[in-house]
Length: 610
Image (tube, rainbow, N blue to C red; front, top):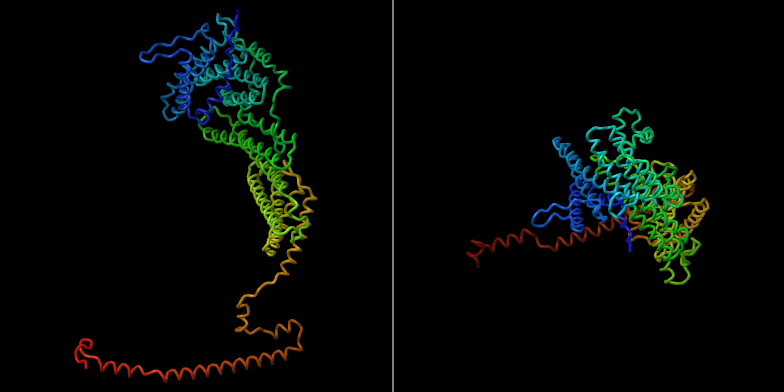
């Protein structure tokens, strides 16, 4: 009975991207990644039976094509080359302060090339079926292993300043990655290939500059000038490998059936998602948004649950984008393999995801406001007395309080969106966000004024002040939203603005009536100042036009003043008389002192006492 030959194919680039991102290379920590590779090699040696012994050293068996029957044997060679490459990159960073370490850097780079050449040779034999082994690999695995081999070889040639050889290897590598990107099954694979392309684009530009090309920044132009014979000389069998990759991946058919990330634009500018992790999570975001539109936003708990699922995915996407951007900014100044284009795309993608998160959070809050709007709140804003008793009033107060808090959250989200760089750079987007902020500020003031009016202890003065602020915000919102708006978070019609203005006017009029009808209790000392200050009644009457009564008013004032003076003199005489009577009945102080001195003796009265 014949057995099928084992398939040793695996995703080389995806494995390397995940391992590098998780274990230190995202932060430029080559030492941590080198130690991880050492631990990985130790575990792979144990499971493949290629250990070096415990007590005494025993050289591991050399990996041959015929004995390759497990995919982990290929991974052992891959991570051995990765450990040597991490050593080389670590010395490359240290040689800035210690130039003598360049020799160690090149030594480890040659070791990485030696191991990667062995891996490429075994993979080629398994792919072409030239060996006695029954195992095989597919064209994609062999293509990715070839890309890794060309990566290591181009770095060594680049460090030796062989610009022609480095450019040829880098061109072969880029062509293979472009072929994988064209035949990618989904946007994640496409972004993964783009990520590896961006990592070595600076080396292509530098080689073109050293070779005297005037427009070295134009990578597409540099690649167009490289002939196919140069690529075949750098990598024998290059053309056949590209054809088999296109046939296996189905590049032509894949264009129509690929699970693609739809083009993302913001105010007419394309947002490039060049990182595989961001692309993977953005595919989920677009799928969740489409599902929300297809199933309907709905009301109640089910609709809010759908919004929460979208916000959860968007929050995860924002966290991934922020982490990638922070790592890029932390290592961008020291790593020569980082592309400036990648940094720009990460910044733009991160801000776009934040804007998308805030916009959907605002829509979720407004869905909550719509679900809270019940029959407990009267439609007529001038109706302050609710039918239904105390329970109905408490329900209306709680509902309005919750609505005001939701509008607070909406305003907070709009303020955060207004501070984003992509919003401030676009005039249409900025005016739209500021117009929405003014509109929801007016809406918040209006609902808060209604709460002050229907409260068991109403405050009509506060309501009038809030409605005055709301009218100013409404004018600002009308001015901003009348201009052309790009990327609107929400569409506010002119009817909504006019309706809110009308309701605010009706409520303000009713609140003023309630304020004037209030009975205000005077303080205890309200008229205290008028007992000491003479009012200029003559001038007041003159300004009022009552000239006939000015003389009568003057005589009245004189009589009141004379009566007050007479009363004051009488009171002073009574007080003076009482004071004399009190002094006559009080014994003299001198007599008391003389009597006490006559009773005193020596030493305080102990001698001479009678």
